[in-house]
Length: 185
Picture 1 (cartoon, rainbow, N blue to C red):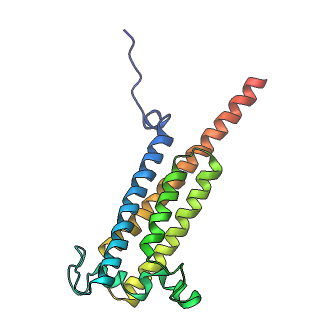
Picture 2 (picture 1 turned 180 degrees about the vertical axis):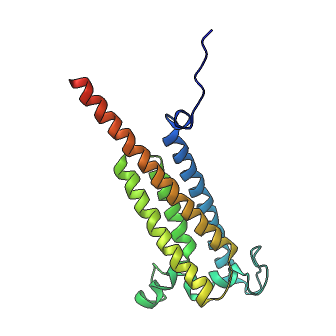
Picture 3 (picture 1 turned 120 degrees about the horizontal axis):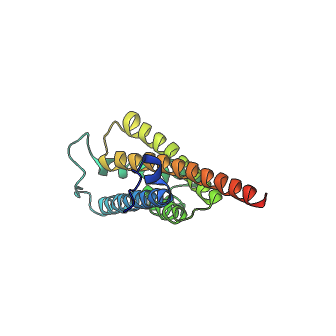
């Protein structure tokens, strides 16, 4: 009977490490996708029914409907003034989120370093956009939006996972190069 070596932190994560980051990124993308779908639903429903009250409307100062139906709820408050309110790009922010989280989930399945870096850049861009939207939420609209803040958290955690996945991919690439060099000698 052979005794097994006790598992260390390194041995636990080697092998399935990339997979766990992929699962985490895809899971967060699904959460972001669902939040974006809900955002779009609330905004479109509120546009057609002024008396509509969403689940996330808790009080006068904690109201996602107020945020989603503000001028910043479409085209991030940028596209309307630049391209006009009738522009095909001036859609609810949730529509952009639906598309974005789908792309991030798709890219997350790749273990290629270039695609993972591209995914990290997209996620970094979404975090910059989250900072902009958080500023608008707190200082301009003077409101609290639970769905918005949850989306910011999803984006931030996604950034951490994406950067950790890149570190693992770089480490694996270095190990493979070293293995090829030692094998060729």
